[in-house]
Length: 358
Image (cartoon, rainbow, N blue to C red; front, side, top):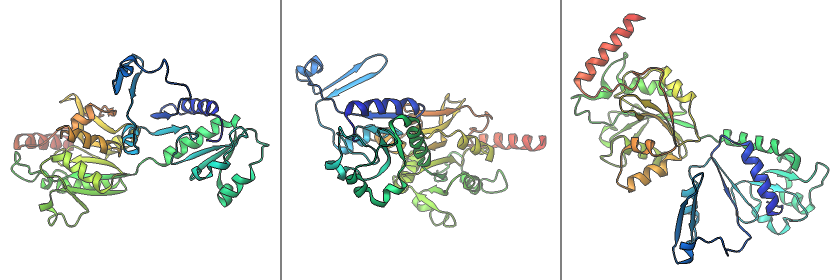
């Protein structure tokens, strides 16, 4: 904000080029008249026109978008660059340009992250110095020729604000096919739910057991997230976790994955892509990403609720139909399920062979 719109557009284009790799949106206003631009269907009365332009898609609408609708549209983007001459934003880059003085827009400068001058020799206007006060002492100053430094600042800000990671052990299943609680089966010298909990603690800020409300007493030694939606299995557990901590990412692992190791979690965490809605392993048996050993980013929460509103409560469907980072596991057996006595016996045989080889 603070310079003509044409200059803002040029700055935005250079920043977007420098920040390739992030999922970026750009918001601007158009000073031109609508004549000749409105699609014919809209001229005839259509409220919305969607056009597949091959290399990009275009959506024209006549209805206004309130902030809740805008938040939904921009939810999946890492960064939204906004023309501050027309719109407000949470953070501001203030450009000092006598062609577009900010004296009447000081109220819009609420959280500046940088000040850009036309040249290093330019002084800041007195009204801006008075408005920023002591905050001016910590604000980086750039000139228009230092766009690369500005993009580095934005990149550092994005990296610094990557959501922190919580761990979630899916221990709330009823284990009807197994005939016993899968969380209590001992594969590695501990009940499986406790084994996974201890593994997750090494890679997450906080770790929780996901459980049914009737399990809370039995699981009282551990922090728990009880299902707030009944009967939805892992999907309900995930939504319940996001209801408690909507701004954290969740590393989720199910008790019926007995071959998960510390190396498995390290492989997943080190290849995490917070630009996507989730990071998951490809399951060769289903040929789809596996939702039961996945890092779910906060931006997946609205998507989960959206799919639920459409009648879908399958987390795999969300992964398949969204921007998901899919990893090829280094060990094809890590996603082997143990859901019934036959699969349990197979897993125990595999573990016995692995231990005899080491």
